[in-house]
Amino acid sequence: MPADLVGAGGYRAPMNAPRPFQRLDDRLSGKPLDDVLLAGVPDHLQTPLRDWISEALQGNPDVSRRLSKAVVISLGWPRHANTTYSGLLYNAPREELLVVIDAILQLTTEHPGVVEWDDVAELEQTLRYGRSAYKVAENMLGLTYRVDPTVEGSFKEAVQAAEPTAAKMLQQAWHHTYRPEPDPTTAYREAIRAVEQVACPLVLPNTDKATLGTVIAHLRQATAKWETVLIGANAAPGGPEPVVELMARLWSGQVSRHGGSKNSRDQDQAEAEAAVHAAVLLVQWLSTGALRRKS
Image (cartoon, rainbow, N blue to C red; front, side, top):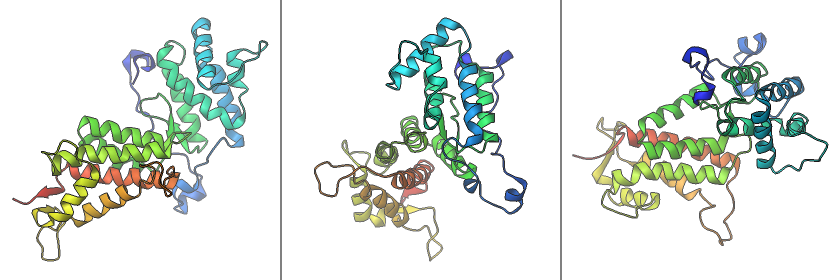
């Protein structure tokens, strides 16, 4: 948590711990959270979000103006002479309100003393009560998509299990997938890099330029030398096929890897989400010894 967003007495309140609000009838009927989360800015959240922008920028006037100016410039918005920077942000088009808030959170560490911990906590509470599909990211420097808590838990476990570079790549893949303006192509690329970071030194430790493709090829050629902790039909450790198949689908699905091909294109959102969740599983497996060389 950034130092300027720590509460009074150094208290660091857990962000994103409570589940999103659900109506009684939705909860009793067992409706999944994904069915009640609302994308964009619904009617009942428009005014509270505008109010948050206004209140969050009411700190030190000089610093608040610099933060507002930085947000406007970063978003590439023109400002007319008779409009203040903060006024431009408050009156942003409805569909841009989440983008504005995300930018304020991103840039607040460069302009400390404006957005306080209480402001961020209030924002997260507003989004949660409003059943928003978005929430404040754990580092509180932006917004991210509110995915199912169980799915997000698996992601966090994989990050904790991975070595630092792979963990960072996996976090980047997650960020580009679930931020308010997702970048599926970058997310897919970072997902593959995260898997490569763990798989290459494990499978091909003496190869300087290994890729996920060469790892897959080696495992297919040397199947008899590798096993997984998943038990096979004979009650012995099974072969590496489940891991190889998931790697192969992730690798072959990256159609954005090479330009110039008739089949080359940017990845779409569904592909990015599938790739990131496949990478979460693979990083978790590879980091915890689920794939191992036979002794």
